[in-house]
Image (cartoon, rainbow, N blue to C red; front, side, top):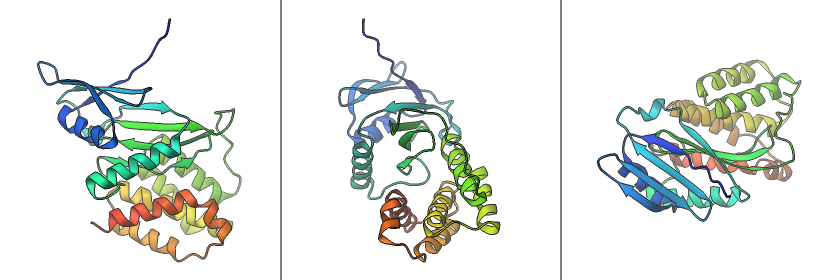
Length: 238
């Protein structure tokens, strides 16, 4: 016997959800508008999502989420970014819908978060090692703050608390070098964008751009440099 688990997520508007996922390249396998709004969508052979319509959902306050495990996370990220840019004219980094940074986590996954118009957070990731145990937090105060802010901002989806942690570190602690400083500034800019604070986001992006990075550091920070470019382009429209 072969089993398959398919998440069924809520949304206030089935047509809006379908339009968003079609932009990403999903196929509509089933669409029902009445009596109960419902949609079944798929991407390739193995990714399936289903949605039911309910007016009780407030997208900005939704906690609905699911995880898509893949062995091609970089490919999916680049594809979804490109499709969103082509259809929306920008890569949405704030508000709803939005797509987060692709990054290596401290718990053995390389992943990104994508939040749809209904407020559902679709987490897409690929294992980077044999263990999914959390790595211990660094001992150095600045590195520990970046580590904790990243976990709270993405895994817990609490950008306000994550921002407070980083603000204290940026004001009181010393980074080990430009790469660590750059990573913290881009994370803080990303959190500011999520908190609808474009002025703060732009300020941190400017501080990051002013840092001098070696070619080796730029290679190490490839994910952060890509995210900085997406944030700058999106914030330029505010």
